[in-house]
Structure formats: structure tokens, C-alpha cells
Image 1: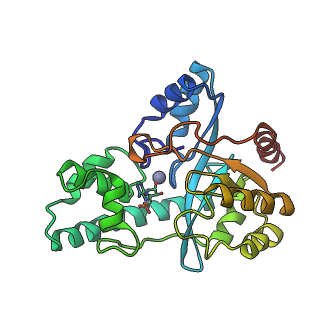
Image 2: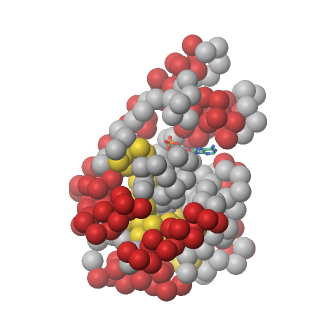
Length: 273
Ligand code: AMP
Ligand code: ZN
């Protein structure tokens, strides 16, 4: 799940309070390309009796496709990992000007300052903050509409940014002592890249630990196929809400869960590494 440290809308503390309220006993905070919300979330978790697994969702590239990698339990001070995350966030910030310029040219009145005011203190700025600025100006009703009209890869205001290679990042997560799980492998057009053959290669040759099977962007049929694939390959099969607060519909807290034995195996691997 995501907090306002990246493109969610709840602070880490609010997120923990809501998770307790909805009856969860463990959450993993996985903000995009930053660990910055974890200290606050874990301290709130200690106060409210909720375990918070430290995570991060890292935007990677494989064969030109954007693939997200969930990294659990990494050494957050690993210099190579710190460098990569810093570089990704710099790429996120660096494209805001160009996106705003494209929107201006299309006649939408929006400034870089408008976007930054939506991101507030978030160290990881994303397209959702651009969307929020357009919504605030009355150009759209929600983020989904802005992505569909302007910000998706095939839309007029899209600007690419730096993302590290997925295979290299799996290696870096593992060498930082973490567990590497591909997030929503078949969500939003990724199915043609993340084929069963490719997932097999990542598992057998590159040390991938698991795949997120239960996710709102996977229908029942895809979940079954991914679950069988994970079982055959000995991959961990996780579930997650991909909660973004008000930022994403149908991604309520607790909507998908990770089974306890899988969670315990994640913890065991983190300890072993
Ligand atoms: P970026 O991180 O700037 O590449 O923006 C991608 C992020 O935007 C994703 O990780 C999602 O969190 C969010 N996102 C993508 N599509 C949508 C959508 N249709 N509605 C709401 N949020 C979205
Ligand atoms: Zn997000």
C-alpha cells in the first residue's frame, strides 16, 4: 500500500490507523521508489499494535515495458540501492516541466507549482500528482480520467523517465538483503511482456522470489493461472490492495491478502539474507 510519501493520499500514520480499524494485523508500506514513510509508519504501528513490513515499489523496465518490483526488508542504507532510488526520483522530478509544457500547449492552464503543491513534501513525485493538479483546476473528475485522456503512455502529455533494468534490480534487492516480488505482473497491458516463459526465466535464472497474484487488476482466471505458475516454479504468491487512499478506486484496504505462511517465508528469507 502507498502513503502520501509517494502517490497515496493518507499520511503513514493515517494509513496505519485505517488498517487497524479495518482489522488488518500486518501491512507492507511500499511507496514508489522511496523508503521515507517507513519510520513514521513503523512508529505508528508500534503504538497502535500493527506490524508494518518495510517495503518499496520500484519502477523498473524490461524489454521497454514498465514493470514494478516490490522489495521487502532491504538494507535501506545500501549505497548502490540508495543511488538507484535517488536516480529514479530525480527522473520523476525532471519530467514534471515537460509534462506541464505539453498540457499547456494543449490549452490546459497548469503550472509546475500547482503540481508541486499537490505532492506537498512527497519525495517521490508522480503522474498522479499532475492528475491531482488538473482535478483541482476542474479539468477532470478523478485520476483515472486524467490518465485515460492525458497521462497514459499512449496519451499526449506522457513523458518517459529513467527506470532501472528489472533483472539488475532483482539482483540489487537480493544483495541488499531483501525479497523481490514482481507487483501485479499482468496488470494494464503487461501480460504480453511478462509471459509465463519470462516469469520462469526470472525465477530460475535471476532469483525472483515471488509474484503478486491477488491484485485488483487481475481477473479470477488470471489469478488462477498465476497461482499455478507460482506453485510450479516455487515462487511466493502474494496478495495486495495497492491502496492509494482516495487516489485509486476499487483498491480498498484489505481487498487482497497475503497468506500467513507466505508472509512468514518472506520474513524468513529477509532474516537469512
Ligand atoms: P508514475 O509513477 O508517475 O509512472 O505514475 C504511475 C502511477 O500512477 C502508478 O503506479 C499508479 O499508482 C498510478 N496510476 C496509474 N494509472 C492510474 C489510474 N488510471 N488511476 C489512478 N492512478 C493510476
Ligand atoms: Zn502508486
